[in-house]
Length: 423
Image (cartoon, rainbow, N blue to C red; front, top):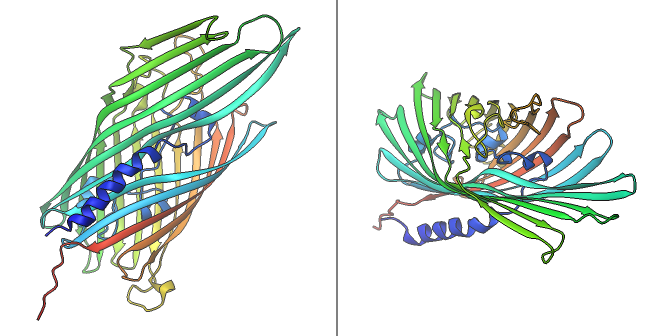
């Protein structure tokens, strides 16, 4: 029998997560463009191993990056997973520097078996973040003015996933049906401190409510009784989002001039994406894995214009070592992880369609370490990861960024369907 109380608590926590996801988790000026900064969608062990997941299967942790992985769960187990992250960030354009610190609850999910061959998962995780605030003052002749730019919001993915073992616990298929939702607001204020010119305030808001699909496949090839090779493949189809955009402009004061316009029919897309991953696993000892992701952003329209984005590639790899699973020593039962990743930006910053001005992007390099510490029951885990990220722009005049990120993830692993016998 399903533990109804535990299920109700899990659903309640999922609902409570909704307002928390609206909080900012970045200060990057680059989030002024497109959908903002794309989120890392890996959980727990994968986060400390470079953000991998396509070829990972674990009976102890949830992996929404590949929905085919859900069938790896034990048929008596219920898993509840919640993660929070924070970061220190440094920005410089060569002459000016800025330092920020922020963080937030990042994701929440659960996973459970439906039958011996079918498993389900549900959760809320981020798709993108928007959060920035910067400004400047200028003087020309006898006229002085200042500009302020602010942005908040992001997109989130509420998913329900289903996975089926279709051949001898070696081949699994999976599907995540997601609801992509969120609001993104960009604000710009131009105010004159001298002269008679009116100040101008512009606000652009994007509201997204649409479906998102992710398909997954995993194949496990046994090498020996304790060693396996696992290959994973995922595909997410492109989608023309159901979105509303609003442009509001205020000139001078609310009494001297105010215009508001709701823009309809503006096209906003997300791209086809395909991911491939492979891993070598020695049970309860070693995991080595690598991922490649390709997203076809160049064909996606943003405000009914092409050319705002460029294709994105992400490459990541990492490993995990568990000294002695059966030891009484906590240090020997702790999993130690490390990884690295590279990705290019999907953005073309300051791109101008129909002109000779082509927007530039940036490359991102990152390295991570972490560990997974078993709790008293030796089933639940506390995962902690640390990551250093360097954002290197294509041209020197753009902003360079550095991040130190840390993530804490608690995986609650319960014998949900287990029935004790009474003599």
